[in-house]
Amino acid sequence: MYKVNVSVPAVSTNVGPGFDVLGLALNLRNVIELSLRADDRLDVHVEGEGQEALALDVTNPAMRAAVRLFQELEQAPAGLNVRCANRIPYGAGLSARVSLAVGGLVGANNLLGGPLSHDALVRMAVELTGDGPAVVAAISGGLSACSAGAEGPIYRTVPIRPLRAVIAVPRLPDFQPRLRADLPARVTMSDATHNIGHAALVIEALRLGDFKLLREALSDRLHEPYRRQHIPAYNAVVAAAEDAGAVAVTLCGPGPALLAFAPYNHESIEGAMQRAFRAAGIEARTWSLGSDQQGVVISVVQ
Image 1 (cartoon, rainbow, N blue to C red):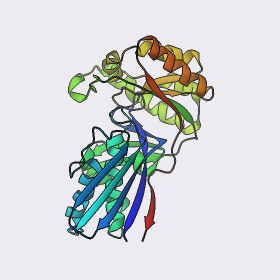
Image 2 (cartoon, rainbow, N blue to C red):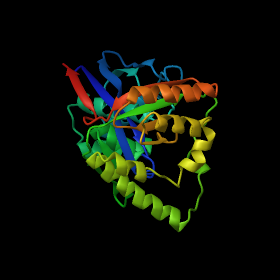
Image 3 (cartoon, rainbow, N blue to C red):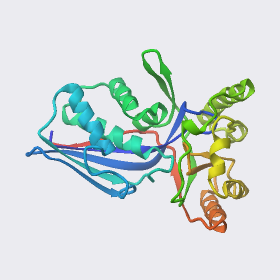
Image 4 (tube, rainbow, N blue to C red):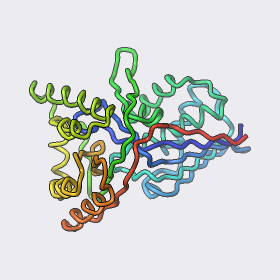
């Protein structure tokens, strides 16, 4: 096998109360192409989103993942080209780095004839990225539920009704994602039980396509209150989206991207969110995206 293309969807993790547990795949994709070289060079090319931030050497997420798999199997090729054609906004909370790592692993596995199973690839990707929900949703599509187990990640993909949602990514050059170290080390029992119950209801709402239930269930107390305050105009943007027809709005991962769920009026919601950000002096890009049900898509050229 000479060349393989791997298309990997964006993933919005957490999905409100599902902190570090839920991931929703969205139909916005990075495409990672891996091809063998006759010499011993490792060459990386990036175009599109993140091209100014991503490394062009072995530390690039896709190349690093491919090399990790080759080392694990002790079957490294002489040389490798990695081409990343990126459409997922980088550093916005849409799991762009995870998509590159998954693409590198899956592509490298296919170049070697597919020796690793689906579960083995999931485990390796979780080890590399530390983001189980994003890995599972990126590989399998749909809604993922993932948690740490005694012998590795425990995960399932939950079938959901097809849906469309609006993503808004504000241009915030100085934004620093609020990672786990910025969150409280301890939470109250009432906040913990709130999130457990609401996360279960979010799963049921998405499974059934029940937007009324989703409106009530998409409430978080563990991470969003500490993260949204660092996104200018957050409250105004949420209010504008809801006035335009969104049933609920939540952060994508740690942000700053926002995810607005709606059964209709997606174009109007996009415009409303852009105007609300612009009123605060912030430009924002928006997309109306369907949920992704495919996960990784592979095409091979012999």
